[in-house]
Length: 584
Image (cartoon, rainbow, N blue to C red; front, side, top):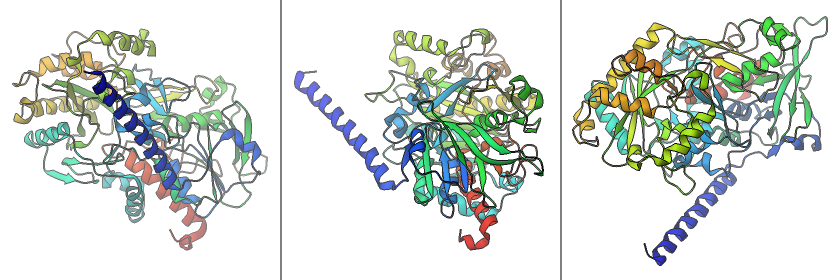
């Protein structure tokens, strides 16, 4: 390439960078969000009591805060920073970078379950909507019914979210291939573009717009009343404050203690008005962790860490579950265009089939990766559990540069289990809210989960035998499933030791190549930790509103329903407090 050509390319890349940066800033300005203040500013602003203090500005917390602020004073405390101005959050092409970021400012916090699977939790305003694959699909009607939700209000709350941040994807070629392969393999009917959970094959929504720009739960704060809504970033809530004076029928939550980005300590308190509440929306890891650190949980677990018992509840941290995912790598003639999740096959056997493909090579992109199955984001499978550590990921990253680029030409077909019956638990490692608890999911402990995984792999085999996929493969004639499973064993990256019979035993393949798709839930189940209105049982003025209350993950991907839940519960709480006069 000549000097002039190189200069033109460089100049073009610089122009694109600044155009995209200005686009992100323009989006932020247009939203008309409330001020996003650093937590250290709390001591400089007039002190006031709040009608609601929400812990966690994530997928549920943001729509909840926006809704409640329409009528009441709300303080929203988020332990992470702002998503705005961070290109790695904003653009689809940089999806993998956030999950690979181990810096203190990272919007994600990695953890390894005791099972040996590397996972991640969000640490940013907007929560999981800032670091996920963007797919949007509603829960099936039976989930709504079992949750005891008002169907009419649910059907108002989903569109409230959708009209603000959800889009239809410009479907990528790999996703078109999966659509056609699913239909040819018998996962029918084809239901077209729809948010609804319908058996067969469909194209779902996405929070990425047609330019690849991500819209997050944080955007929903623009629907709030800025005069009533205060948002603090880098505010790590380490304890809920209770009034436990004798004479009270039960302990009452009255405030929170939190630290700021500089390590400074603060307290915020509720007003004394009837109905004021602390609402914990810190996610399936953070919510049970905060309850225990505040003295609500199993007695032995609290005593082990010298935490004063406010309320003994042996169910806090129990029933943790993660939807196990396994994938098959398919090498292709050419590098397919990058895609995350757009197409889904919903089987009647409790298995979902999805796909991802390609990788971006933007100026700030990681050199050669496997997209949603990249080693850099924790999907690793070559090391025994006793050697598990994030250092193993770093070692892989260092060594992969010796691999030919063709190794990364291809895509994945994924299968995941709906509503796994295997469950585990969460226990504290220490009393620091910023530490990861020890989490166990017990993947495939229940035999039915394992049999469903085998069904999923066999469904993928049927898809790969269709004409659509045979023509896509690198050799133009397709590959035996045994060869593809062998390739997949080396492509999937977790820390569970592999067995030599992975390709002859699909059960073993499932166990050895299991990864996460970040749909973990539980720890504060309804009927055990919270009641049907998500009020913490045995405590006044305290609720939990997030995925920690779920017995199973809703739909093919939970973000639609968790977003809806934030809006839904905001309206429900306002109606309880104000009656239908709330006008919502």
